[in-house]
Amino acid sequence: MATEALLGEAFSDHGFDVEAFEVVPAERVHDPVGDVAFPDPTGYDVIVPLGATWAVYDEALRDSWVGAEMALMRDAAEAGTALLGVCFGGQLLAQTFGGTVARSPHPEIGWYDVVSDRPDLVPEGPWFQWHFDRWSLPPGATELARTANSSQAFVLGRTMALQFHPEVDADLLEVWLAEDRDGDVVALGSTHDELLSRTAELADDVAARIRLLVQGFLTYTAAQPRPS
Image (cartoon, rainbow, N blue to C red):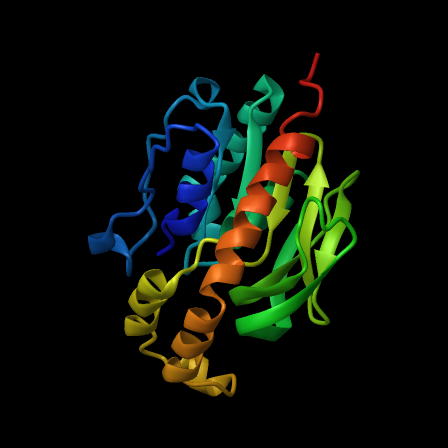
């Protein structure tokens, strides 16, 4: 499961109080279907739905908490709350606002170069990926960035979605790799040691770029006019 990690630090640096909400507890990770009582979205300036190991289009999940979270995202957007989705969270936003999400023919795990049309919003460079699905853009959305395999970022009003994981540091990656029981990393041609080594090499660069990313989101996306 994802945590806010570096992303939380970047928001804190901009003066935000960061509050985490666990949707599926660790003891239910293999049985994630169930009702969730989400907090009132109008009590927050920014909501950041993060990553997860499931598919946003899973029908059983859509009939339970994924559907409820989509409704929360719509309510938040209508109230003027800024939204920043990460990986599963980005796919959730795409699906919420009329795009589609489906299995990708080219899954991505590891560090991939992301090409950006708006480096002031989404800095270019290697960003960490761990996903098997990809989105189609919601109506009215503008794509900001991409890899050769999938769209990587879009904006829609006060909403921005990211396919990559800007929050990843070595500590968080070690947790994910410990849960890689199916050998997804090796299946896609890498090793755990290679990913950890590359993550360490990029640590300072990523820390700088994630602060630019959050600054761009707050300056351009979150500053868009609120719905009337």
